[in-house]
Image (cartoon, one colour):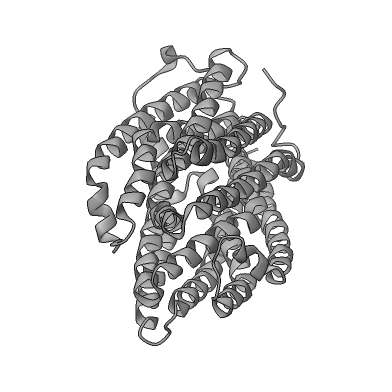
Length: 450
């Protein structure tokens, strides 16, 4: 068993100990996504469009696995904070069962993929899109289990092992991409199988890690006790609905962009999302660290430190993303040019400019969601997240007749994120103040009774 991070005694130090390896992983994965897009864009603009238009469907699969992983992480973190270890063993087993059931559902939905693409207004490159996304759906269980085990190891305070492993498997993916796409001449399906093979290697190692007894949480079905699945989905379902609706909004925005700009709109949007994932990659790591720490602190009922770590994580993440977004603004044309998104300099300019103001708002929303997840209060963020996405879609629809050339999508997202970032911050502050007041009343009663 490896030495895990001590979270309760020094949360700020634990924040950096947990997030530092994850920052490296997040940056590497973001770079991988950009390179993967680069290889596909070298095939043809049609292949690039096929990958871009199916990106929300692939994200939906990742959303399933991450939602169950976050739910399991939240329970394990809280139980470790309470030092109730056997319940953590039961939690991970229920996470495995949940992923197995979800994989069966996703694989069954493969028969309806063409109908789903038709709903997305995909009338060109349909066969290429089907060729790319079908294997991803058929092997979806690999992506689900990979997301689950990354989250469960992190709940123990161990982020180094998943970081090292996923970096190695992503390197394998980068090697397999050009090999399968060009050397073996598999074309776009080679990109699919490169991702599947590398993810499978990660899952096999995760299973070895748990079954060999190297982890703090034991993987043994003798500890399985029915009932805890509800607690996992209390956190998982809101996360899935939130991320799932985000994927739906991506599909909706793709539809509007196709109507206003044609295929170039989808390419701009897909490229922007991948570049954004690179810019905010450290913040993703901060969010995962905040999730684990808030779970431990909430389980230990240390609300003062919980409030402190929330504000600290916001300051760190917002400061870093502002610096990164400003730096990207000056190299925007070169980066977009790598993916053959040309002759749209005006659009690229406004995407980069709005990003300087948009990304800090996103960080408030992301960090607030992770703190709520750690506390097991995901249904609070579900209401705001649903409101965010619904408001975003409605506002974009209202702006579409007025702002053409895809500007309606950009402004709809920016205005919505700004409004709801403020709402999230107020919610968290109010919840933590309420907890502190409750603790003061309890302590006062104890003192009076002595």
